[in-house]
Image (cartoon, rainbow, N blue to C red; front, side, top):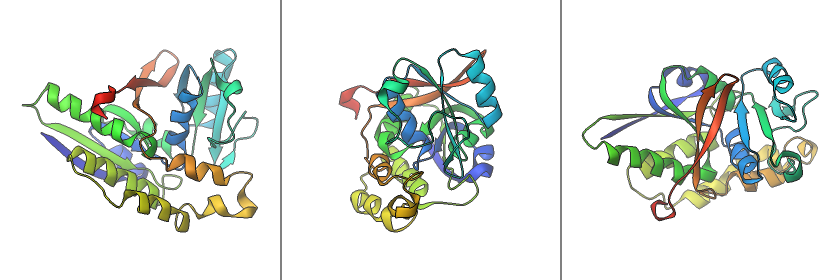
Length: 242
C-alpha cells in the first residue's frame, strides 16, 4: 500500500519521510540524467559552492558543474545547462554538482528513508522503481514524499508541480492524457526564460526541450553516501516495467 504526499520547496524537503523524490525539472535533475547518459562515472551533489571546490581538490580530474540564480558559479567548468555540457568533458569523470534548488533539497531531506532525484525525463522509471518496492513487500505501508523544489527552493514552479503530479498519477497506475500539452505549455509560464533572447547565455532554448522530454531515461538516480559525501547511484529499470 503506497501513501503518497506532495511537498513543496525547502520546507517540504525537511518534512519529507519514507521514499523521497526531490524534484527539479529546470534543470538540476534533468541534467544529472544527461550527465550519466554522456558517460559521467559518478555525480556527487553538494549543498554549497565552497563544498564543491573542496571536494574537487579531493577528487583528481573531477568536473565542477553548478549555478546560483541560474548563473554558472565562478570558476566552475559548466553551469546547470544540459545543452552546454560537452560529452568529452564529462565522459569517464566524476561530476560535482551544486544548485540553488535541487541539491538543496537533497541535503535537507534528513528524515527520508531513501532519496531519489526527480525529473520529467525519468518520471516513469521513478514510479516503476517505487512500485517494485511495494510489490516486494505488499503487506507493508510505503510512505512516498514527492518534493517539488521550485525556484531557488523558495517559490513554486509549474514544471516541478507537474512532475510531482505526473509521478503520483503513475504510482496510482493511471494515465495523464494531457501531459504533452501541459509540458509544451510550460513555454508560456515557468519556461519563458528559455526563450528570452537576452538570457540565452545562461538559459539556452535547447534546455527547454531536453528537460521536458518525458520518460527518456530508463533509470533512477538514488542518493547514497560514502566517506567523501553524497553521490547519485544509477539504477536501471527493466524494459518490460516501463
